[in-house]
Length: 124
Length: 84
Length: 279
Image (cartoon, rainbow over all chains, first blue to last red; front, side, top):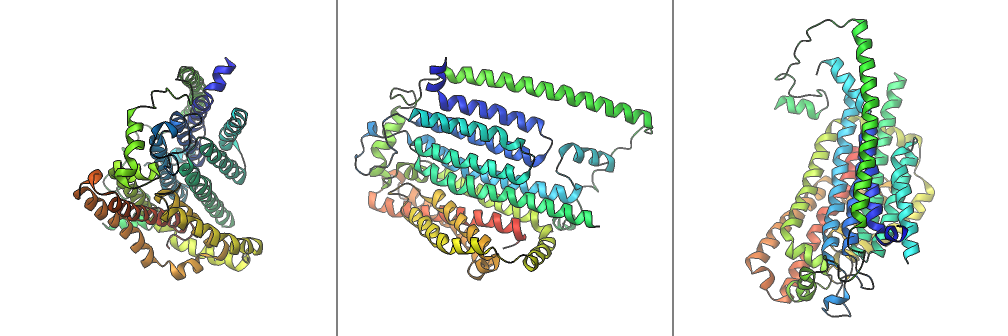
């Protein structure tokens, strides 16, 4: 069991992080913590993707000294996918944090439950 | 190598799980930054140097700064409300 | 239009309020029903928390069991180590002129996808600008107040005098050398943006604004995107993967720089809009 866990260490870590991040998103009423947990979920998916492309005893796909021999390099496709994903995840979290600032300006709190109560009270 | 990876992954788990649990906002941001740092070392071990550079600059630097700025702004707005 | 203007200035939380009015509540709320409501809500929250924990434990179990059944990590015969990889690694240098296969791949084989990503960054920056429009006056006051009461951090300034040039040179290096070594548009742009943020934190945004004015900033982010669109169009028109390696290398390098410009201006733009609401 332990050897299996160690063998698939990246996938196991990624799945635990994903589930715990999901739990944080569900349970924290604070919107900023939700965004933080969302970032952690993002990173866990990236970790799983990139770990699938890794092949032992091979180097990153930069064709300097080895020529174009595919059996010397790791899979470049997950790296390309994740590279764009990281940058987009930053812009998504920047956008949601800006939204949270506006919500704070309108309601005076970042607690989602209090915001909902306040909205109900104001009849919106 | 496996041992190093396991230690880093455990560190990643600990920081990832505890970051949203922190009460103090600054400690929360610092824990999240640590998470990004460990992740960028892991990208290096996974033979993806492009990812390591981007994660170190963006995941660690810019995201942490954005969270910090938001928290600071909210604290300042709280301060002005208390004064009134 | 005027309601949108109001919303941008932060006066009105909901621009569509005039169109949508809340239905009048039917019964008068008494103290008793309110207490009932609260008890109901608390009960619901308790059930919700228990359900969430159970759901997540189930999710962990499913995912970990699935992860244990995956093909072994990093073994050469994995299903991911297939003919696509062999095709990309085998012919990337001849077709794209880039020795760094990752950079060559995201700018050539998946060029349209990367163009979409650049547009996402551009639109995200525009949205942040719109959202934080209203906070501009408050932020300006705050900045003036904090400048008066706290002078710049001397240690940070001294360290940044040494660090910022190094980071800038490193960022430029990986931006322009992206097709030969690790790096490329996304990494280089991100490092350059981080260097600009560091500079602004250490020496104040005014120093950055001396050379990176609103006009320069707009020019950089729009010209980056346009350069990408035009050059990628030219690249596809000339025959995409079929064109000569030397020409492909030049085109890829310029497209790479265009992506770097977009990413850099986006990263610094986020910081600037968060601190000042403007550049």
